Length: 127
Image (cartoon, rainbow, N blue to C red; front, side):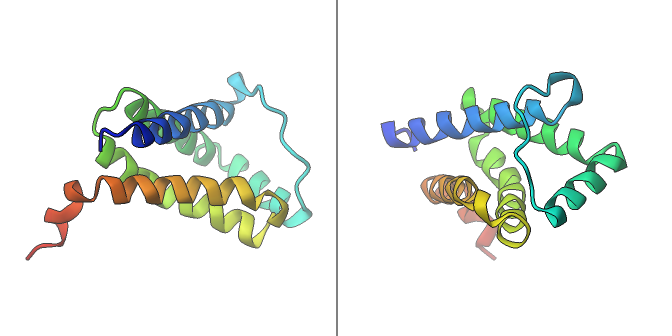
C-alpha cells in the first residue's frame, strides 16, 4: 500500500480528478471541451441542463482527488470512484469512442489501486 508505485498512481489519479472535477464547475471552466459526436453532445447537454448532476460529480471528483492526494481514507475514496470511473468508460465506449484511451487509463488505475488496497475491503466479503 505504501510502495512508490502506489503513491505515484494515487498522486496522478488525484491530479486528474481535481483538474477535471474543477472543470465541471462553470466558474472554473478552464479546459476547452473537445468536439463531441452529436449523441455525446446531446447527453452532456442534458446532464448540464439538470443544473445539479455535473456540479455534484465535479464535487465528488474533487473530494476524492483530495482524499487521494492527502492519503486519507484512500480505500473509501477508491470505492467512491469506482462507479464514476466505470461511467466515464461507458460514456466513451458508447458515445465517444475516440476519447476512450484516457477513460481506460482511469479505470485501470482505479482497479490497480483497489487491488493494492484489497486488504481494506476483505471484511466486506466475509460472512
